[in-house]
Length: 167
Ligand SMILES: Cc1cc2nc3c(=O)[nH]c(=O)nc-3n(C[C@H](O)[C@H](O)[C@H](O)COP(=O)(O)O)c2cc1C
Image (cartoon, rainbow, N blue to C red; front, side, top):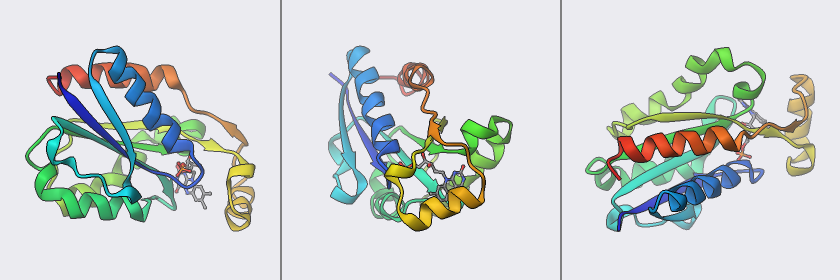
């Protein structure tokens, strides 16, 4: 049985929900998945493949996931790895997908990881899940409120990815 590690970084819980859903979709495909927060520093060495995702603040992944990727880059370079980003641009302006894909370019260069794919998912703007400064930024940007996570899209991406990763 193949075993996949799904690692996430989140501030509001949005990306944790997407990561859990990826774990469920893998399970439905007969693949064992373990879903863990980057800040818990999971060891990727025993897994057949790794999926890593983060929410975004000002065009950047969260520090906890960036640090985890950098710390584990040597182990990750030797196995299939996929990345995913959860953000608001994919909800409000999906035509800017290339801009969102570029959020992970510096990390890919820095770690030398060659991802099988970079998934791009709509996130959420739930003021109850944000700090006051974050709420003010969202308000200033006139960002629409809501949970825009599309779990059907997450499922479809995960199924395709499992095939591409040879799981
Ligand atoms: C202060 C702040 C800055 C943000 N910056 C961006 C951004 O640059 N691009 C984007 O698409 N989404 C941006 N977002 C939206 C978040 O990425 C979105 O809410 C996502 O669902 C957060 O997931 P997380 O809470 O799991 O990290 C921002 C949100 C906040 C609160």
